[in-house]
Image (cartoon, rainbow, N blue to C red; front, side, top):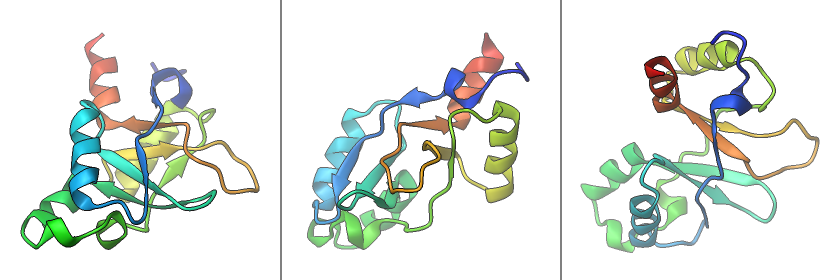
Length: 128
C-alpha cells in the first residue's frame, strides 16, 4: 500500500459550480454526487473555493435559500498533485485536519482539479 500514488486511489472528477450558484442548487449537486463531500466553486480558470458538507450544515441554520455558493464557500483549500505518494498525501490530510484533498496537476496557470482524495478512499483501500 505504501508504494501507491494519489492517482492510484483518488476519485476522478469533481462536481463544480459558479460562485453565483444558489445554495439550493449546490445542495442538489452534492446530493446527486453520492460519494462526494465537496463541490468546487470555479472562477474563469481558477478554483475560488470549495463548499463542503460542513459549510452546508452551517448554512442550514441560516436563510440558505437566499445564499449563493460564494456566500458559504471556504476560500482555503488544500491540494496535492496526482503523482505524489499516498503516504505523503495522508500526512498532509492529517496535518491540515481535513477529510479530503483536491487533486490538481502542478502547473503555473490556474487549473481545475482532476479529482479528490478523501479519507473514504483510505478506508476502502484498507478493507481490500
